[in-house]
Length: 119
Image (cartoon, rainbow, N blue to C red; front, side, top):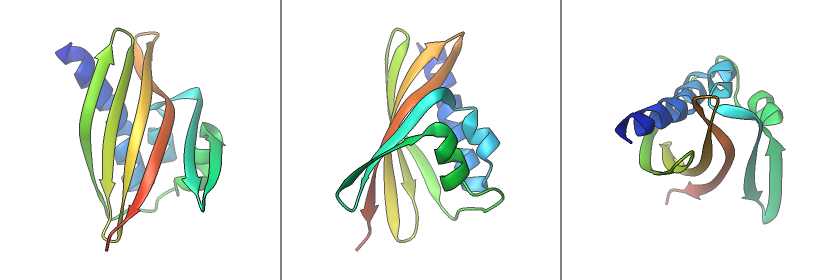
C-alpha cells in the first residue's frame, strides 16, 4: 500500500508542480483524458472538461507564488481520494481528487475544489 500511496503522490505532484510552474503538459500527466473539474463560482455550478481546464486555467510559463500540501490520501483497491491545499498570499484552494488506477497508472478522473479567501 505504501508503494501505491507513493504513486498517487507522484500523480498529484504532476498537478501541483505543473500548476506552480505554468506547465500544462505536466499537469496533463496527472489527469485521465476524460476527467473534468467541477466547482461553484458566484453560486453557479461550473463543469470544465480537462482539456479546457488545461488551456484556460493553467497559464503556460506563468510561475505561481504558492505552496502546496497533500493533506490526505485514501486508497481502496484501484480507487483513491486525495485532498490537496494550495496556499497563496490572499486565498487557498482546497482540492479534492478522485483517482483510478488504470493501465498501471494512478490518474485523476475528477477534481472538485473550494476557494477560501483569507481575512
